[in-house]
Length: 275
Image 1 (tube, helix red, strand yellow):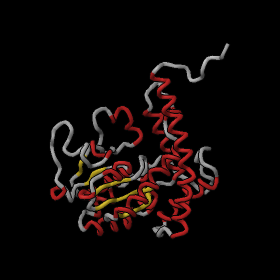
Image 2 (tube, rainbow, N blue to C red):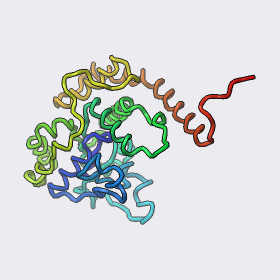
Image 3 (cartoon, rainbow, N blue to C red):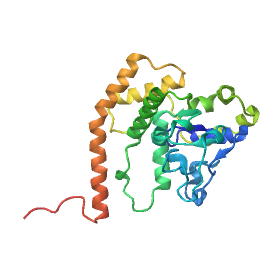
Image 4 (cartoon, rainbow, N blue to C red):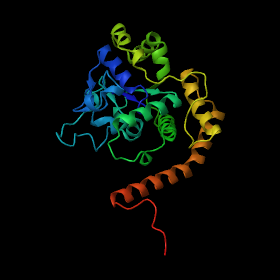
């Protein structure tokens, strides 16, 4: 398969639109049932998602409802969106080509805040959701670690590069894939649909990560945007950051689960005063 991966709001839908326009068969609908009305404003050209966004593995193949089985040799030229957590659990036999898109962390944070404000059901506590900057790091660090470990064919590109120079960016990908209508693919890119743009001002990544940690996130994106290999020292910096973040992630996850349990049991967040 041609697997399009990345975090949410990273340009995965844009790449699916590009590949569909280029002539590749696509797995997934632009707007699954009810999506256009619920969150269509977040992506007016469609999301192109399927049950495979969570990975191509035993839980999704064969299809849990229809029983349909996808054979690796029959889906080599099919494009499918799989978010990073799903990519990590996907069977290697399906990873013929992986297009990974990475968005500037500040744009991702702003876009996720907007999406959550649109899509969050009434009454759902936003504090039950993982901090967007932490989510960006977890997914993109997992992406780098997975492609370094399993070594499948991958083309990593920033979403910004796609919007900034669609002609050359898409041409490079289609040359790599060995097929595709370049003119139609380029015409599918709509820069006007980009809702979050980071300028030269300091990026707003929230307050969960400190300034040094935030700089590492931005530097990872910058190296990808410049198509620059990750140097040994920077990889060590990434590993060190991930080790430092693990206790924070454990604490955040424990807090989220505690709040969720309290909500399910209809218990006040704060214990009643003693006496």
